[in-house]
Length: 272
Image 1 (cartoon, rainbow, N blue to C red):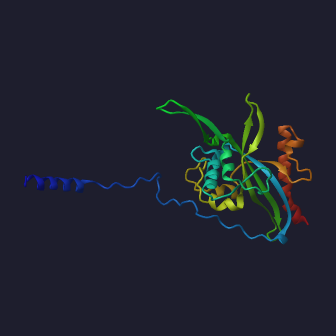
Image 2: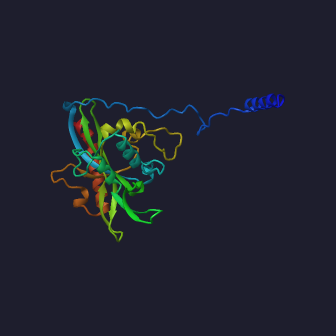
Image 3: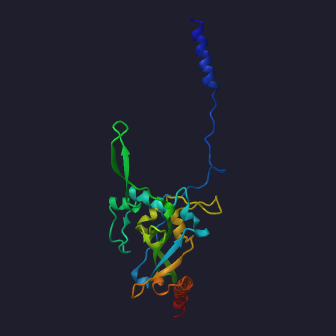
């Protein structure tokens, strides 16, 4: 027995010392790739006296377009990021009765975004009694195929340039009837973009076509890495383009006309 114990101890020590330490796996070919920035770059100060002209426009990003596939990245789509940030109280979501960010959503309002709740039958395994429980319905990111942006274009007298600042983001999904016919489009909520920039700067995006690109959601919006169409400009009747131009081709041409008018403001200001 006295011989066996030292022998076992010796074998144990040998096994421990023989274990190798393996390098920590790196899911990339480089180890020094810069991480996404931790905070958004501050926007330059803007004086009211320097804004010679401004126009508010609403545009829609269709996530089904190839250039916009980042918005629907299955692993972490933008709608999921916004909902999680709201649940963690990193951002505030606002109702869609208007687009002026006047109605903060309550926790109940957040739950309703997913589609409310379902009633589920629960069977007791012992008594076989049936009871019913109300459970929240899970959000389906695939339902949100478009995003509405509200932004202001303006001519900055201090720099003699036309610039744009995004005010809000609203995810949109289509609502169908029981026969599968489209009834209307439903914006889920509004996000006040200036207050959400810090959070978006910490969220990495999937760069379509270039895995080496390192960009955040704040980069996507600030650098305007998306395609979109203008659906409304500020007007006295508060009408959308689709309200007076039902034809899709005419709406697209009108969208391009509004865009051209905005960009022409800079050259018009120089001519004066």
